[in-house]
Amino acid sequence: MKKKWISMLLVMIMTAALFAGCSGSSAPAEDAAAKVLDYSTVKIGEITSLVVNDGGWCQATHQSLLAAMEELGIPESNLVVIENVMEDQTSVTNAFNALASEGVNIIIGASSGYATFLSDLAAENPDIVVAQHGDQVPNLIGYQIRNYEGMFLAGYTSALMSDSDKLGFAGSMSEASVRAAINGYALGAKYANPNAQVQLVWANSWYDVDLETQSAKTLINQGIKFMGMEASSPAIPQTCEANSAYCIGYNVDMHDLAPNAVMFSYMWNFAPIFKDVLTATVEGTADTSKYYYEGGDCAEISPFNEAIVPKEVQDKVLAAKAAIASGEIKVYGGELKDNEGNILVPAGSVMSDEDIKVQEFLVENVIGTWK
Image (cartoon, rainbow, N blue to C red; front, top):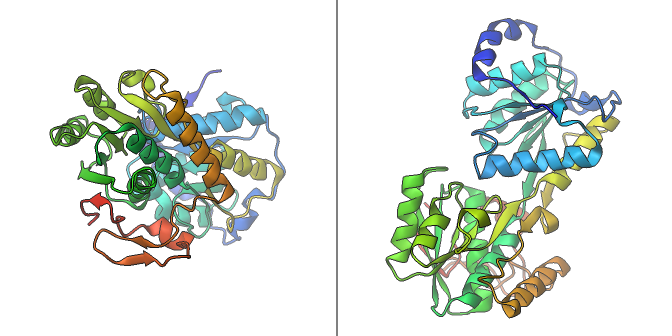
């Protein structure tokens, strides 16, 4: 079915008129979904920081939303997308108002940088449900994924495959979910090999082909053959492939970008969360006190690259996955130290979700700094 796209030019043209028409109602945001809707007619807005086929975060979010819509029988034509929305008040307000003028019932904010602005806009527009990735914020349904579960498996796989104790990790920006990916990877590596160390390099960018290429080269030049990544461009997998190194893809399945390098990919699967949020919107039960912090199927891994990963390694990784799900493996269980020698979690205890979500540390087998 034909998708409906709105250009940013249209957004700017409409802004002046729309500001005058915004609701000033002080009704509680929890009443946003008071009216029962229909799956065939519910209208959805999506705001993304890049394009929806960016090969990374935005694509993972968009694909998850489409999957949830398909499962619920919501036509794809009911989705209105505004791409390349910067994380500032004017850009987010313009996008929100443009979607409101289209009569959307729910808006998905795909970047945590939108949260503060969307919180205020949602309070002013209680007839629109807003779901936003990131920490819990007033007036919004919040959602996050325990990405460290999938990245634990990534580090575990890398350490099982490597003949060396030294692995690598190419990070984007030092944000909490990125640090969770790094630490999860390092803890998984340590679970496989107590002597495993993870050399960290930063691109300090969410998407930069040149910087990500250099990150991979820096690790490879240190003799590192297996690495994790938290990045969106194809640069790291392709650099690995060109240099007989191996990596774990991130955001979406990156196998086809570098089939001789990607062992498997960690994939953000928001579909189960979006299905619940869309169902609540349609049924009139959406509640902004609701917060989703999910692992399991949401912290998804792609099929293994059987040309690279032996069957015995696959079996061990799948067993570890089951052990995480059962609680046998507690990723942030103690004793756990950071790489400055501080005890984060004493023996016999488990880190709280509040501390896990902040991640203002790197675990002891990471070489590098998060600051």
